Amino acid sequence: MLVAHGAAQGTEISAPEWKLSLVSGRGLIENPLDGREDGETFLLPAFSYYGKRFFVSNLTAGYSLVENKRFYIDLIAQPNEDGLFFQLDKPEVAAGSVTSFVQLREATEVSEIDRRISLMAGPSGTLVTELADVSFSWLYDVTGVHHGSETHLSIDKQYPLFDGAIGWGIGAVQKDTDLVRYYYHFTEEEAGVFARRYAAVYPPGDVTDQYVRLQFSYPIGKGFAVRLAGRYSYFDLDGRLPRFIEKPETLSWFAGIQYSIGNGR
Image 1 (cartoon, rainbow, N blue to C red):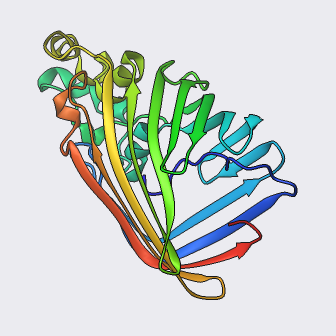
Image 2 (cartoon, helix red, strand yellow):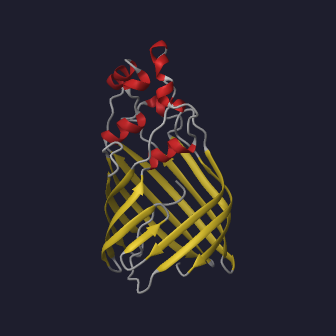
C-alpha cells in the first residue's frame, strides 16, 4: 500500500511528537486479485505519534524496547496487506450464498469470495546508517484468522533534495504456507471437490513478494507541500493458486498537495 507501515525513529524523544497530514489529489492502488477492482482515492490521510516508548505510524503501532541513534528494537502490530486487497472491492454476495451451485461449475469466482483482515504482530529491528536503514521483522497472526506468519526485510532512506526530501525503499516479504493457503486458495465450501484438485496441482507454499517504492515532497508554504509517491510490487506466484492473481506486477501511486499540522517532522 502507498501508506508505509512505518517504524519508530532511531533517535531519543524527550517530548511526544505528533503529526497529522491530509493529501488532496489523486491516487490509484492496483489490485492484484482476479476480477477485483482497483482502489481509487482523492484523499490520503497520514498520522504519526512518537512518545517515549509507544508510537503510531499510519497503520503500524508499536512499543520501543531498545533505542539509540544507530539501532533500535520494537514490538509492532499492523494489518496484513493481503486482507486489505479483498476489502478494496468487497463482493456484494457472500461466498456462502453461492456455494450451493459449486458442484455445477468448476469453482466460485475469486471476485465472489471474501477474506478477513488479520492483525500481525512481533519483533522488529532496524540498523540506521548514513547510506541506508536496514529493517527486519517477524510478524505472526495474533487474531487467529489464518495462524500464519510473515517475515519482512527492507532497505530505506530519505535524503534532502533542493528544499524538499526524496525517499526510497526496496524490500521483500516472505509469507508462510498457512497465510498463503487462507488468502490465495479455495476452501472446500467455495470449490467443492475441485479444492483438493487445485491443491494437488498447485500446492500451497511459502511465497516471497518484493517491492520498490519512491516518494518526494516539496514545501510550498506553511504546512503545505507537494507530495508524490509510487510503489511497484511483484507477487510471487509459486505457492499461490494462479486463479487468484490477475496482475502479478502492480504499480500504485498518489500525487497531490499535502497539509500537515503537529510538532513532528
